[in-house]
Each structure stands twice: as structure tokens, then as C-alpha cells.
Length: 171
Image 1 (cartoon, rainbow, N blue to C red):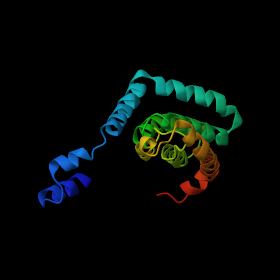
Image 2 (image 1 turned 120 degrees about the vertical axis):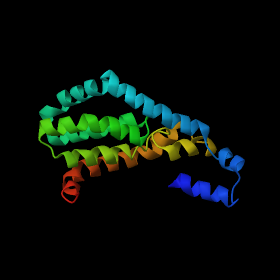
Image 3 (image 1 turned 30 degrees about the horizontal axis):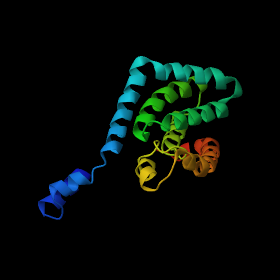
Image 4 (image 1 turned 180 degrees about the vertical axis):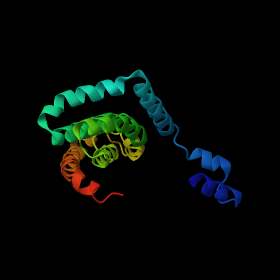
């Protein structure tokens, strides 16, 4: 849809092609493409399944809440280096079998993965907007940890505790 809109703006001479090209942020685009490739490589190599097995082995004795917490932390951890789409693609393939084996509703686990993947507040590379403002705002990695850490903790507590309730209202 955005591409069609952009073509329309160029067609009516609201923006020239060189001006449109100048606005593309190459490093961010390469980061996103690289993250998708890394996610696919993790899936094909079996690393994603290996990580899932280790996660379940550590958290299963503590119950379903611990498993959801582990999935949240793994998703956020991976999200520090991958964009949210690649993160959901990888963690979804890990979380669904875990949900089945732990008798957790798949919708509940999907919400945990989705919310965790879209909320990587503690690193500049976990979210495109963070990457865009890193250099322009003069921020350093520590700024994201300092200001995003508390928000990440609150988000984690809310998502892990409320995922079951939210899943009841999902189609």
C-alpha cells in the first residue's frame, strides 16, 4: 500500500525519484534484510529447535508461568538483534510445540511471543525506530538499557501475567 502511495506522489510530481531515493535509510534497510536472513539460518540449522529444547528443560519443572516467562525472555533476547517480524517467525516455531507439550493454549503463547517481539526496549537494534534515532539523537547503547530496562520489566510482568486473559478474547 505504501509503495502505491509513493508511486502516486511521484506521478503527480509531489516528490522526485531522486528525492524519494535519498530518503531511504540504507543501513536500516540492510539491518532488516540481514535479520531476516539470520532468522532463516537459525531455523534451517536447527539452532532454534535446540534453544527451544533447552528452554523447556529449564522451565518445565517450574510450571506454565515459568515457561511463558522463558519464552518472553528468549523472544526479547533474540529481539535485541532481529527485527520483530523475523523474531516472531523464529519464536513462533519454537513456542507452538512448547505450548502443545505443556498444554498451554496456543493463542496464549502466540500473544506472549507477539508482545515480546514488538517490545524490545533495551537495545537500539531491536526496533527500527530505535535504530533510526541512535545516531541522530546522539544515544549510546547504555541509554537504551537505562531507560528501557524498567519499561521492559513492567511489560514482561504484564504480558506474562495477562496473556491467558487476553487469549480468551482473541478470535
